[in-house]
Length: 316
Image 1 (cartoon, rainbow, N blue to C red):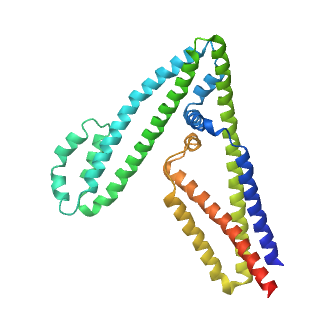
Image 2 (tube, rainbow, N blue to C red):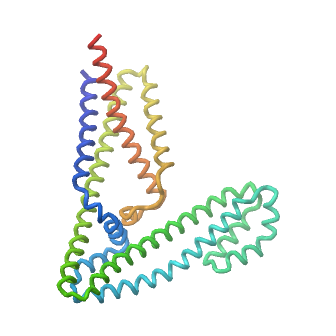
Image 3 (cartoon, rainbow, N blue to C red):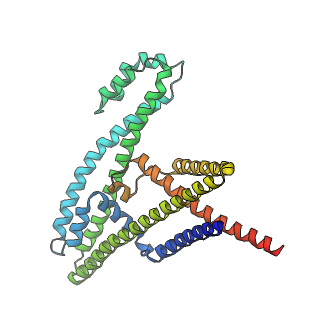
């Protein structure tokens, strides 16, 4: 009786997950506008005011809105060049460090004053990296220092990619708005602008709907994990001698989590950027979602296997 209850509960969770996936597929937006949607959400994540100004603009006020944000993007592009330079300098420095071995370390260290003067000539963090390497006394200490430099490089690379994508996406939005604004036909301009504003607002609703489904998925995943732990503990208490099976199941879950973390991308999505997540934090979310998927598919598979085995036993 207890096993039947467990099977019913797991089956109910799996059915709910399937219903959630089907429902989400019906709420998708026009595939032809996917690029516009992604660009709008990237802009909304970093500069919601830009999207809000476009949504509120009239045909008469549109040129001033476009001019304002085009000027802002020019300034951001100028600042991005300095970030790119710092990123490229750090990349070159990392390659220097990674190419060192026990034989070349001492020679590189002896020549470091000249190398650092040339390498960090335009870097804003020259002294930080000079002092950092000077604190590495032997090749054995180099690995830990390289990890720190690599973390700095990953952070600045992420900052560069986020800002570059924003500028690219916001320029695309402004270019589309300018194309509508420059239309010589007043009636065509008005109708096109109204249609574009409708799209912008619908993109916001679609994003809210996706967030809603994501929250439901998290709730479902947490609920499934809680039920699984609950039944595992119950089974462990009732059948302590067979608890090794439970430990194996927990080990598999840990393995699934680490696989999810390893294959997860550190590149932040618009919603992750808006939430202020880091690359490592985003990989943790990817690992958690991957583990939830493994649990759900495992539950469905166990139900199918159980049904087949029961059918075979009943037939015999």
